[in-house]
Amino acid sequence: MSRRPGFLVYGLLSAFVVGSAFPLYWSFVIGSVTKERAIQSPPPLYPGGHFLDNARRVFDQIDFWAALGNSVVISSVSAASVVFFSTLAGYSLAKLRFRGANLAMAFVVATLAVPTQLAFVPLLKEFSNLGLAGTRTAVVLPFLVTAFGVFFMRQYLVDAIPDELIEAARIDGCTQLRTFWTVAVPAARPAMAILALFTFMHTWTEFMWPLLILQGSDVQTLQTALDQLKIAPAGGIADIALLQAGTLLATIPLLLLFIATGRQLVAGIMQGAVKG
Image: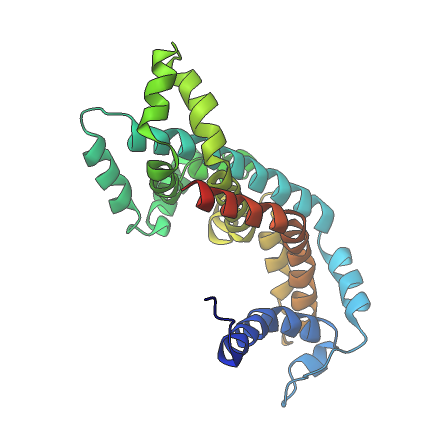
């Protein structure tokens, strides 16, 4: 007999939804008031009528559309690269038998505990020596593949592809590459879609590495371009309303991406669960 969720479940879910949506609402509230009202106490709780004015000032002070295009290109290339290489490596570690596979997997897991920021200074020096500092290429290169992506795809593919299916493909004369393309990739599509979305989001919101490598360059991502808005005039205060309006504008593409792909992602997850 199936049990219907009670009020406690609905209450917890409602609290989770409200808590998740509150930062977005708060950004809109602060971004829709004046500079002076944004820093007053008590803080504003309801939206004002100045969001369009603040948005217009954002477009006047930074090259928003160029930064948006750079973020789209960098995030798309990073997501495609991470998905491809992580799926390839995850399939190899999950289904191919070769000496050192367990050691390689242990190395991948160990690197998850190493903060990415530790590599920023050596990478910055190396890219400067190569003349790549200040370019979109330098932003993308360190993140063409990630340890989390390899680990995630390996764990998914271990159970998603029966060993018998791979053996059958080999008996039919498929090469390793053809077996990967015709057997592993279709089975991995739900996980690939999730990994692509997470990687796109992570790259889109990444701030520290683009700030270091693009310093003094005309090429800016949305996050580094928005950083210019927080600079306060001499003896003045930072324009928090302007910064929040720009932050909200930079979040809109991610929201549209979620709305456009949400149903397909859920369907993919359910399909993978049924197959597993």
